[in-house]
Image 1 (cartoon, chains in turn yellow, orange, green, brown):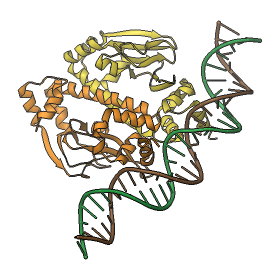
Image 2 (cartoon, helix red, strand yellow):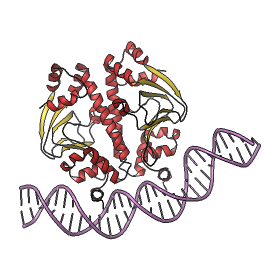
Image 3 (cartoon, chains in turn red, cyan, blue, purple):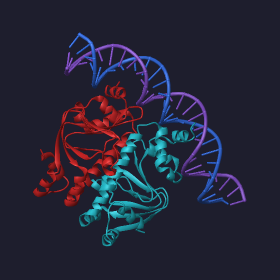
Image 4 (cartoon, helix red, strand yellow):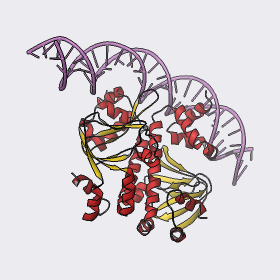
Length: 188
Length: 188
DNA sequence: CGTTGGCTTGAGAGGGCTCAAGGCCAGTGG
DNA sequence: CCACTGGCCTTGAGCCCTCTCAAGCCAACG
């Protein structure tokens, strides 16, 4: 159950077996049905989640009632509302499962303690945060390009996940309507 | 010279005087003329920069030769290409000064060493990275809104800096043309 | 089999872009 | 001291990409 997350961590820092055990002891396991929420608008986000099976989405609903997908999360990805966790304020996001899924979750306060006990763990989170930041920079750039290029970029990075996500969700992630995404894909 | 940066750090972690001295010893000071580059496309980004006076911009030039501003940096902000620093690959960004400026810079390798010597420093960088990530999330959301709302959001957060930056630069940051920004501002 | 969710296609409207011209101001050199 | 130049802001006209609204289709499912 912990193989995926430990392998992920080992890409950036080296934990000895004792530290690994100490870390995994802090994790909870949870299975999710499709459409099940792990966070809803207005709640505090108390956990960071690591996906070991399935897929989730984080989205915001604007004043007009439209969904805007901030990010997807597939196997081997972290997902949570880092703003809510950082500031302790209620979240503006919803996070739910796109497929039946399994996640490992860690309490944010327990994680802060672990950072003091195992500084390498804080290093790991610093690095994945940096990666996430960089991925968003790219997204900001592409949001300024026409629909066709946005989709092409998405396809080149996440094309292998495309079948698992409804087109409407991809359109929302790309900041375009389902109709235009459909037209772009059919090159019409 | 170090008052601003130490005050910034103290918002998130507490360094004792010895650690402060150890950290500031790793900093270099640099004065910049308006339009002077601290990073150009194709170079490796070896330093992270903390602005103590003036303002800088980080931008990318696309295939059509258009500038896209990724971020501004005013007093009390960090700026650098974290992707290039993280991966050791050449940068796609340019960073230059919008006004005559002063920055403190720190070598990325020296910084990695300091993280091991002073774990609290890694915590500090983890936290500001998290803040930067969250700020970008908001930007991603607003890039999906009409020009007027983008400007309103910019104004509400950075309005006090507006006089110091040419309108074209703000338009580029907002992902619109100078003409539309001008029309939005004149509510015409 | 009716219902629901997702994909497809069409027609019209509109926000923002492009291209173009003109104005204002500060810095510079004759 | 003043004309010239470059940087920046302003305004107009036409066009295009994308959105909106509306239908219709198909597959999965209870």
